[in-house]
Image (cartoon, rainbow, N blue to C red; front, side):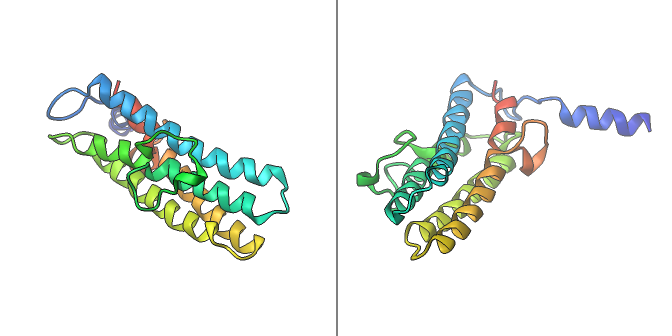
Amino acid sequence: ALMVAGLCVALLVPRPAIGGAATGNDHQQAIAALADVKAALAELVQADASYAADPKVYHTAAQRAINALTGADDQSYVASAGTPGDPAGAIGHIDSLLDRSGTLVWTATLESAEANARAAVAHLQDAAKADGFMEYATAATRAIDYLEVARGRPNEIGVFSGIEGVLANTE
C-alpha cells in the first residue's frame, strides 16, 4: 500500500521536461493557449446567456470561438467575425509547444489537447451554419465538451490534465 501511495505522489508532482528544462516561453505559450480556449468557451456562454432570438448572434459566437482556437493563419478563420483570442490561436500555441525538440513530459497531453480543440472546431463549424437553434445548441454543446477536455484540470494526470496540467510542467 505504501508503494502505491508513493507512486501516486510521484505521478502528481510536476516533473521537469525530459531532454531539457521547460523554458519561460513554454509557460507563456501554454498560458496563451489556455486563454484562447477560455475565450472560445466564453463566446459560447455569452451567446447563450444573451437569449437572443437572432440566429446571427449564435453563428457569430461560434465563428469567434473558431477564430480563437484556430488563429488568423487557418483557413477556418473569418476575419469579419473578429476574435476574442490572439492571432496565433490556441492550436497555434499548442503547435509551437509541440515543435520543441526532445521528448517532454507534456507532449501526449498537448497532443490530446490539440485533438480535442480540433474536434471542437469541427462542431463549432456545424454550429456556425446551423439552421435552427436546437441544431446549433447540439453542436455548441459538443464543442464545449471537447473544449473542457482540452482545457483540462491541473489536478489530473495524462490526457485529462489538458492545457491546465501542462502549465504545471512548464514553469
